[in-house]
Image 1 (cartoon, one colour):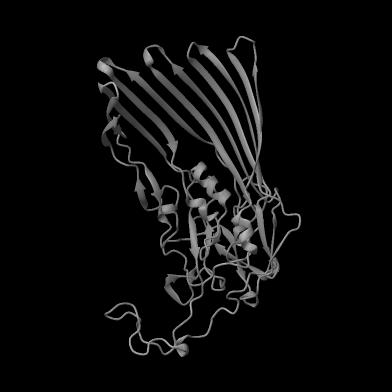
Image 2 (image 1 turned 30 degrees about the vertical axis):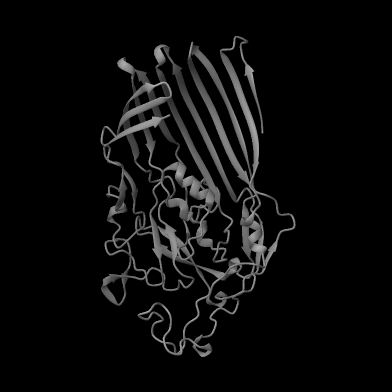
Length: 439
């Protein structure tokens, strides 16, 4: 990492700052464990002709002759205990990210400074896992209807001939054009240390993250699943025919804190902030196999920072279109039911995103906290701090998390709908009293 600071006018009041850093991801068990012949694995083997339960009145041990050699069934996994056939790219490199920063700091008055900064981070050489035993031709496209707007979207089904095929895994680095994560942020702040011990800080940040995960990276299911290509490029360049991303909006945060000394040794503090509610839904990487819950860490980080809501549809071989969907087909054999979405889906459940990232934003959490503090010194070596704090003075009830999975009805997620079922809201107004003794 390198950086420099330059006194612009030579009067020690205005400074230009810039920095550049490269940070490598540590290569520890996360990568080497894939090639370790000493690994831990499990398998479920059925009991054959054994007692109905192993738990007796004296504990969980068999009574009588107990479990013998003939009570253990056949191993259902012929590959149990065998190290996965995985090859490593001889030119494999460590993942790293490049970070850039630039800013200016100016002293407005004695003890009062104004700051403006720009930060950018981009990562490279993310790990990519390929399974050559299941090529791209093993997937058959199947058109389905998006129940939210009636548009057509493509679901990919794995052909039965490739079920149970022994994986041929190759671990390499993904191309930056197909897998990347870029953060851009601008922030401005003012810090004031005023006479009499008064302190004031105010800051505003605007930022966004653009994620690209279009290399069909295989997870624990070892499938390079093309269903993950829907909305895979937040920059709007790759695979837009499978899911168009119109653009990722910038979200902004604001914070104001102050501390003011009062009479008789009291000190009052206040904090006001307004932030987007950060969503964790994109931990599922927007489209993933719901059975294995394979996800991209970069997508997880993107969702946390960007504050998006998604609408995901968990599709199984028996999933039907929602009952209140006016654009969805009926079951040809039962007019009271909607049609099955994809009867040919055989690789397990697929979690399909129905709305583009950034099209549904989380609400803002506005909160005001106020505190009062007083120090007592009964003796020279003893300090007692008494403090009372009121959190969420305005009693904000912002929804923090809500269901983002489509159920039996589409109405909550249509324009003007109420959204998903809330599962957590902001904590109500609370009072905290504390007493701290130092000696």
